[in-house]
Image (cartoon, rainbow, N blue to C red; front, side, top):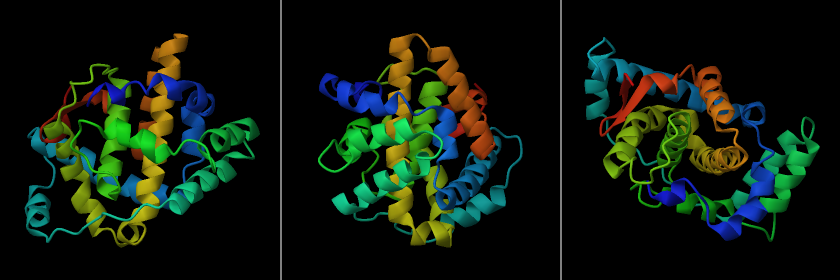
Length: 246
């Protein structure tokens, strides 16, 4: 991933940072869309852990992988519109209002009508990854990669290559495509993942600037453990995606 994965343009920091700085990992998890949470938790648990073990020769379901390989490809692309992105922001802010009113206000102030489009920020994050915009599988892969980059503190924009990013997408895409709920909600899932990726990256930026990187890394690591049962610190990123071992 290019440096845009690590740092947003300077002009963006002042406006977006106020919202992102208030989005702690606990609040991200707490305010996760419940329907999307159910879908992604199942996909990530099945895909990441099973494939990591299988590719490292420690078991897994090779038969299922062979069957998966012969399954016809199902598109997870969708059309993103300004209305859909605003609906995603509003839904997120509404879920945040009770527990963190100031955070909800900051999200709306940064990404609400007439403000910055998180889709634009997200496209900057994708730059150099080979992942596509407006595709639910790509968005889920981007979110996973962001979590991995934070936990391992990968600030070198060239460290996560196109084959690595595509390898992660190849791990999640078949399971996502096979999930009827995910297929039916591809646009909702994709936009939720895009917004989450932007917010998590913003927290990373703030943590680096404020000298709180270690605590933020631990929080994001715990988020993925709690949400998905996935210990990113014990995985290695390769051109085949995530595999077991540091």
